[in-house]
Image 1 (tube, rainbow, N blue to C red):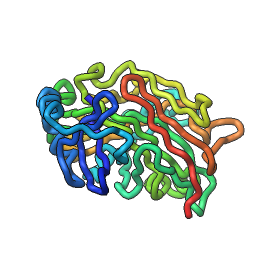
Image 2: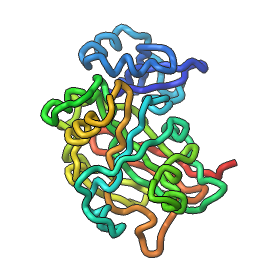
Image 3: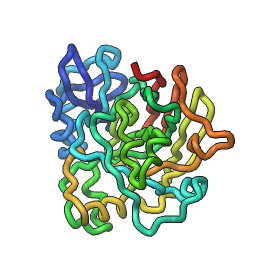
Length: 278
């Protein structure tokens, strides 16, 4: 099942996308969190009774519009670590994104005024559905509601201004998320073995597979739950495969007029144009 957050007549809502129509299931900016805690069978029953809205009549938002936490994992694909000259980590590189950096499908990703080094990072996003604290790895996937596409847009010069990556990862409108959440029951356990690609103006830039993660989804959820309580609606961006712009010869960055797409097998495609910050 595909779950979406959207605006209908200016009202924030959440629901299910089925055969090109949206079944509204809850209303309000936090509506998606409640849906994530429900089993897919219950969601399907509610969707059958809902009054459907054509997809063209709604505006899709980030699937979780205001996550409590957006936890990002760096250097989680071996080939990506190698292309940047980094060693394989023995513990995940963690950093946080602010909700103010998020945009939804087809919204412009903004190249900031202060930099021309906006880079792409195609990522699998994990969306938590059940509270998790000190969860064992073999039980971790039971706390995952579903998966989505994520583009961890990175302003590379600001990312490297200190040993912490936060500045380069939190510019407004640089974190694309969506277009929907695919519930975990519709994908292989841990979303393993799925192709993941980034396409710039139709040209394939990244072409990887989620099985190449150094720390798979279950391991990440378990490790993160040692540090913090994961709540429904929290998002984990699980890292990117090789092929990012800064590691190319010569380096290549996003410019106004470009279109960047993240495509994950079984989930879909997240499309965003690039625009200059006003």
